[in-house]
Image 1: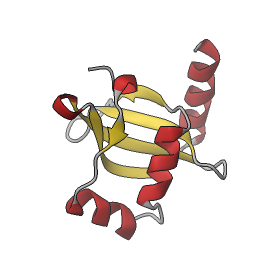
Image 2: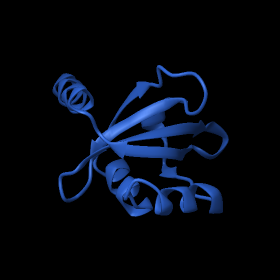
Image 3: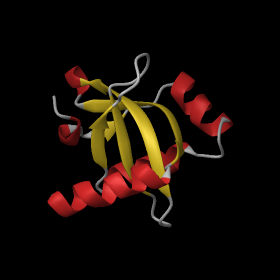
Image 4: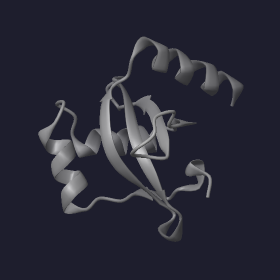
Length: 99
């Protein structure tokens, strides 16, 4: 499954609590990024998460969200997130221009 084909973000108690308790980023902000047409890049780090989902919230804040693909459910499992770096914002803009 291509992450762009995902129909939803999938939340369980663990990842919901992780989002609500760290870095000042709420689960609903991840939902906004997902709904607003993010870009996806392979996670270059080994360990957790298949992709970086980079995009903007409704208020224009850029977030980078590490997600795992759940192909059986056509969903993405958010693992962690942070406020996007300048390089990640540039990557988002470049990829959006390319379509």
